[in-house]
Structures are given as C-alpha cells and as structure tokens.
Image (cartoon, rainbow, N blue to C red; front, side, top):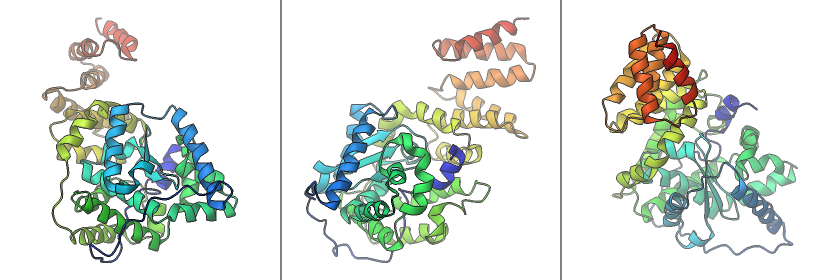
Length: 382
C-alpha cells in the first residue's frame, strides 16, 4: 500500500473521536489498575505479543528521542490516566499522519502528525483520553483476541506495533475498527477523563472539525475513509461531540505551554508534512494553522513550499505571497528566502534570485541542499 492510500485508510483508524449519547458526570468510575495476566493464559499471550513489539518500537529509527518532550506528553497521558499512570508508556513516533493508539499492555504511540495538528494540550487530551478509554474498557484486548482468532495478528501489529509496519494500517483499519458501541463508550470515558483532569472538553469537537477541513480536500471528499464507513456523518459527529462536551463546564487548554513545547520540533514536522505529497490536505491544514496562530511564520513558509511544489495555475503567485509575508515576521525560517530565490530564478529575475539565495545560505550554511544552491548563485552571476 503506498503512502497516498495509507492516509486515506489510516487517518482515523486509531484516533477517531466518535460521539455517543448523552451522559452524566458521575455514572462511571475508572477501573482499578490491571494486573499482568498469567503468561500461560490467552490474554497473557496477547500481552507478550505487545511486549515484543514494544521492544522493537524502542529501537525504531522513527522514535523521537527527546526525553524531556516525551516526558511532557507522558505527563498529559498520566494526568488523564490517573491511577493507571504507572502502566502507561508513551512513545512519540516521527511520522506525519494523524494517529494515536494504546495497546492492552499500556504501550501508547503518539505520532507527530497528530502533534502538528492539535493547537493545545486539551485537544491532544481529547485524543489520548479516547484511547485511554478504549484501554480502560478493555476494548483493545477483545479486538486483538478476535483478530488473532482470524489469524490476522500480523496486520494488527500495524495498529499497536512498530511504525515500520505503517503500510499495513490501511488493511488493519477495516478489520480492527471498534464497534459503534465501543467508540461511544471510549468517547464518553475520554470526556470524563478530560474533565476530571481539568481540561476544557469543548476542545474535543474542534479536533474533529479541523480534521474535516483536510478530509474534505481529498478527491472523494473523505467518503472512502473507513472512519466514515461505520459511523455517523462527519457534521453530525462534530455536533454531537460538542453537545456531549457541553455537559461539563470550565477547564483549561494550556495553549501557551503547548506552543512553547512544540516549537523546537515544528520545522521538522512541517518538512515531513510537505513531503507527504498530499498538497490539497496540507494546504488546508496550514491555512488553518496560519489563521489560528499568526505569530508563527513557519506555517506560511510551509504553505508556500507546498504551493511551489504543486505548481498548479497561480500556485507560484500564492507561494510568493506567502514567502513575502513570512519574511516580514521575526524568526522566519531560512527556507522562505530559498523559496523566493527559486521562483525568481524560474521567472528570470537573476538579481533578486541571487540576493535571496545568498540570504538562505547565510542563514542555513549547513543545509543539505547548500551545494546545489551555491551552484545556482554562481549561475546567476552571468
């Protein structure tokens, strides 16, 4: 399965936020921590499978090896998990897709594509709370047991195992999606966990609203996504989530802390997003982020790069506009000057192109493409 088809299948496989019916605030209590099952039991065998996958996960080149940032995400998960905190082990994985998952043994994956898309802690908590809800309700144990009975465990590893198996996620999505009842229960639990942890539950519907902006840019409008095949229409789901969240009052988003924490990784995540090659979805994402967080020129530069690479009618003009707006903001990434120079070189504006490419080299002398840009600068002398 190629990456284009993977995104169509996998975007909501594990981290879908599915609304349920109305509920009160005190009719559910978190279960006690789960004891490790006997190794000889059926469930013990499932845990052993996940333990082996987690060992591989720790060695994966996709793992984001930043102890401080991982501890920060772990702290959010623990804030939600409460008594279950000692059993939750977060692994942040460098892959540019929207996803999070939690295995029966407590192994949780959080992908950087999800972290790029959420705008505050509360939005991330909405997704992690949902996954912890599946864990507390033991849905993943039931699903793994059923999958193994169908001799399909290898594909299931794409959900809970090594990111190197990411290409199997589209296959797994169709066979591992939770039932409507499971999703309703996990959503209900997730909102309760958010509220108990002090997060603003109304942020949960915003995650779904924002994801829709990308899905609707697909040629099929997102209609073929497995997320839509077994659940209500996207607009209905967003509204129902908002209605459920209104059961609760107050809570915080921790937006400023979130923005500070992700800043060191933002440019790398944006480069990976642009490289996905899903230009329409990426433009929708970056347009939303540039609107909501206007102080960050990185979003404009990444959108400019996406326009430049797509190269459709008027795209170069749109790219130029983004680059020029970005360079007027303090802390603009060097790539803005490279983008300006490349378009000006293409449009036979040698003086302007040379000035901007030299500025790029000044700001990023060790860039991987520095040798190529230097050759362009020499070419533009004549």
